[in-house]
Length: 281
Image (cartoon, rainbow, N blue to C red; front, top):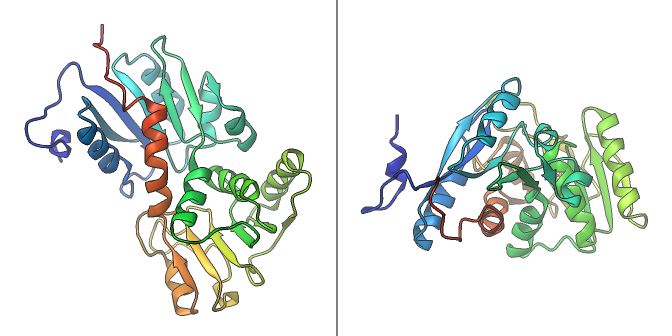
């Protein structure tokens, strides 16, 4: 087992004053957030550390109830498959997170209240723009209707895509997302699609399919064509099966890491990682 202190630079060690942050996921092997935010806190000279917490959906409420009572906890990041379930476990969530129906960053206040926010969508679109891919005025196809996909859908519409097609194995979830988008943005062109991503400028995998070897593809890769941009939300593996298929089809590919990179500053600010921690009493 790796010593958490190995994530800290020489001369720094974990003490009773260290502010603790977590990341909740299941599985947990693919996460990159702890490494990157630990490095950020080290650069800032902050006494904090982020560690991974692997927790099942069944045990999530019990863990969160315990974290609320952990006075040295600054907050935690939430990823697959807990982004939707965590909403009802927070004491307060932002208006945008409530509308999206998912949370991926939770701050613990001094009184123990848990405050949730959703940064996936902003991070995803920011990663695209940083790579020279501006969704504004382009048509987009989104596979998935879970927590991350919900946030991405709202962010793409906010950015000004010309058309957004939602495709999900459970059609009712895609229809629910489309309805919430229509309520928030009545002028947006949103439709329900199939597994066929043809006819779109940008194709996005917003599902967790690709995390594990043998996962089915999230869409019909045989319908991809050169000129399309295929983007991923999964961080690890860096090249998922759908990105490999897209590359073989002559598409431009965009991996999941830029999405996380663009979220780091937002997460750090929301979790108070830039502020000097107070002594735990």
